[in-house]
Length: 309
Ligand SMILES: [Zn+2]
Image (cartoon, rainbow, N blue to C red; front, side, top):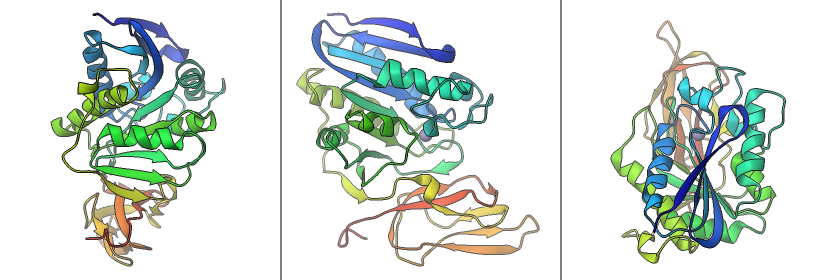
């Protein structure tokens, strides 16, 4: 059985690939490369489409990767054309190129889908542990959690709310279940993390009846859970320009008041010792040393008491 793949042009040169199964079923919206410096999701989406060509697909997969071709060509988190962050531009409008791309993705890919999977990573400037996130909110939450567990990442981050502008926020505002994934970034791709992304998406498709049951991933042990937070813009920011030196790794579980890193001036003097405002897991950590005042250095997720260690 062969799955047909069609290509459609959305706004601003964005190409959507539609995989149509031979049997009816749900529609999955699949995004990679919403941030142009995150190659993991782009390659994973392409590999998923490759797998689907010869698979018995029921329903439709609408895939866009890279979601922002200009940002991807520049290997930049934000657009080189208008400076905008696509992941802060949803649902979008005709205002700027990035806003037009967001509107094209909202209307052409996400709007009437049954589920959204958005594959991100820490990109070039940050570090993150491999995890799958979703929002415990509104009517789609139960299906989002089901998808997050089916994805099979070792860590699941359940948010109590989501800030506006994200693909996930426009999906859940429309009652569409949504998950996203993050991995270590740094401009490189780890084969084990790529494998989790590709197998994870196929497993979600199997969970929702779109692929045969053997595609459903069964991790050896259940995931570890992290809660709250998730608005990375609201993390702890640098108070000075300088060079950031991290003292922990992404994924580290830290106590309240623990050192996460140090900020040095360009003259080499210690400006700030960066400490945690509470205990939790380091979910987002600056990788790039050169830092401007106001840029986020790290963000924490809450781990259940008793799970610390
Ligand atoms: Zn991203």
